Length: 407
Image (cartoon, rainbow, N blue to C red; front, top):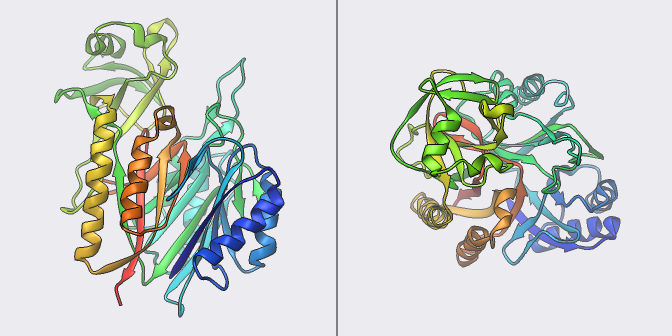
């Protein structure tokens, strides 16, 4: 397999699409592209960008992708203007098989969308990797009302009904901007909303995956969820969760934040794989407090009564330590396995743009030193294996390095 990446920042969307597809293939020394992953910001004319890329690739290239708050490559981190990027992939001597599927049921029911996607994928050769994209935003926000987001756990639950839990799924809930505006996805000929799409890779390819946390436990204390409905959490150990968070933070000022900036909740999923380089925690951010301070609102509705959770805190220093350590461990594992890196994908939480992008710059630096091409996007939700299956993550970065056996 070969890969090439290109970046653009221009308002002329059709020309940008042509340029991205042309240079991505040129940079990968490809005569054609079997797959083109295409991403752009909300400022871009999505359909015109896709049309430009399609004009270069022809009818046989699988094109997927869509909204991104920003773009990360080996040389650039860009969140202003019209940032867009493309990754072109092609098999060499039919060593890798690519297949794609799509469901338009996401707005109706994420679980049904996952089932439909899983049914389509189950007809394919057993994949080494599934890359999943979906629109994070169901209804865009406004000054009058907050955005309504698409929950990702039901999508993954539906998908896992039809595919093996051992199949690694990585990907992202796509986000167009930090205001939770309308999102859009590319699938083949169309730029559309409210989709769940997937790309499978089978054959002589091995993914190395690391989910890098952005939060650490405040302490070792664990609480049992005793009162919850969907994403509305009321009590831990039969005590109001707001009172517990007041005690942890030392005051109640966090209640005025939307979302809460420092505190979160996490569940630990130990890995059965000794060489796993992913965090064992699935963290859920807190989007705000319920009326009358009766409880808190989590970003996802996947916690339930009886589950044990820990209070987490965002920790910039820990983010950098994890990014450095886990990336270096991943590269060493690839070397020990005598595999050849082809390309890296990085799905990074858009909320982490608010800093100076230090961890993205660190990823850039380490992969540049290793001479591995990189395409990253800023996302709403990140998806990666944690514990015994893939899960959706908050405030994280997911790094995937695609490799093949060294010749």
